[in-house]
Length: 145
Image (cartoon, rainbow, N blue to C red; front, side, top):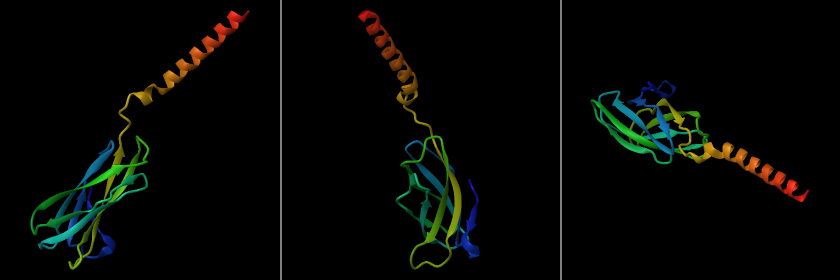
């Protein structure tokens, strides 16, 4: 888990811990939340994703006065290149009517390589196609002589 940090020095009401995620098509960012002041809090947990990744739905979480609660936020791969790594910012904001500051944490998203076998065969099949076309052209030239 990656550590927590309150935003802009304000006294945060929750502590936030985010786990790194590996994404094939989508992945769930696991977020651990603890109360920072010993009171129950209601927060929205959302993920700020870079271009190429999407995290459309924030999670609503009730953080108990003691102990840790775990929430998950789904992150989708849209156009992020396979085999790349991207930084995510996880933010826990108090719901309307609740006091306190927001908390944030960083996590990494690793985009896994393509599991399909056809993309790996493109080059060998392309070379084979060129060789077959060259052989056919040579055969035609030889037949015309």
